[in-house]
Length: 120
Image 1 (cartoon, rainbow, N blue to C red):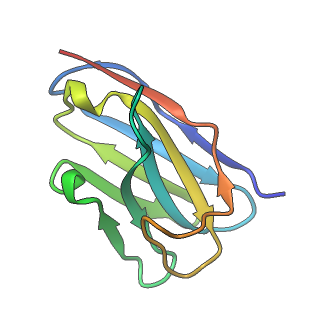
Image 2 (cartoon, helix red, strand yellow; image 1 turned 90 degrees about the vertical axis):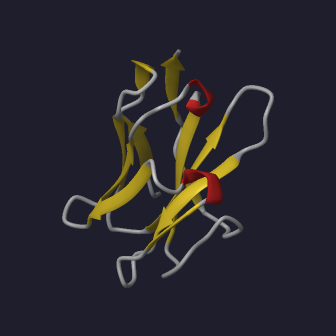
C-alpha cells in the first residue's frame, strides 16, 4: 500500500513563505498538489512529473508557488511565497505512477491534507 503524507502546514501572516512536503513510500511518483478552501471546490495548484523533471501550475498559481522534488527522498515540495489570506485552505498532494499528470489526471493515492492558514 502506497503511503502519501503531507507536512509543513501552519498559521502564517500575509506576506510570509511556507514550504509543504509530500512524501511517498517506496518510490518516486508524479505528484500533484491541490487545495480546497471552505465552501469552495478543490483547486489544482500544480504538478511535478516524474519524467523529464517538469512542473506545471494552475493559472492562478504561477509566480508565487514553486514545486520541486528530491527523488532520493521520494519527496515533492511546494514552496509558497508572499502568501495571501485567500491562500488559506487544506493542501493535498496526490500521487500517480503515470509518467505525466495534470489537473484532470486520476491520482491513485492521496494524502490526508495539511492546513495552511494565512492571517491578514
